[in-house]
Length: 113
Length: 113
Image 1 (spheres, rainbow over the protein chains, first blue to last red):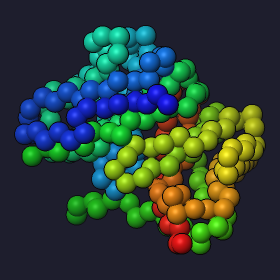
Image 2: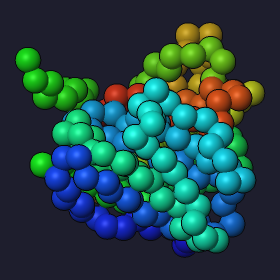
Image 3: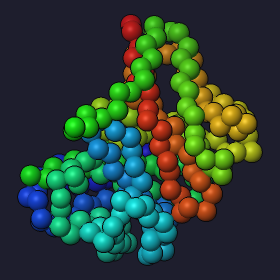
Image 4: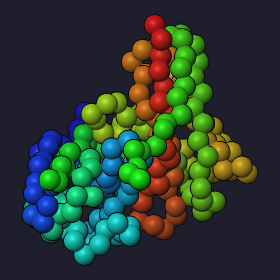
């Protein structure tokens, strides 16, 4: 069964550094998403992306964050200058269309030192 | 003080019993709902979904009930197995918000053999 894949599984970065998290969505899906989950808390929406544009973003997704579809298969989340509070699990998801099941990857654990 | 995360509601059941996990959702404009299962170290795994024009949907061993009057969603798992042990999240999609899912806090299901 096709699945969303994310790399790396764990990223350790110094505060203030840039980090890029990578995702390969399911191939026939058109909507892509990033969520995060701080340890022990619920999953929070960051951004949705369709047709090379941001469709919706949350208040968490400030100017430090950006997303990109650099080629036909990858979907990336960049954090420009990481802060301690950016430490979390970051999940990528994709869906065929809106109001269709969103399928999640197994996440990247981001640790900011 | 420092946040240590949410204390999840916990449901403990005997193997073979039926489980019912409840969720109150927040927005009367939500039109699509999903139940996810999350095992330790993994991403949310799609279980079943339901649209707001339905009040019941059945899958394999699972049933989702939707009560829009009181904004309540439930997940019933028949003949619960040890492999069902996980955290279960409900998620709601608000119409016209680019596929943004709002997750509930989760319920930890523990199945005793």
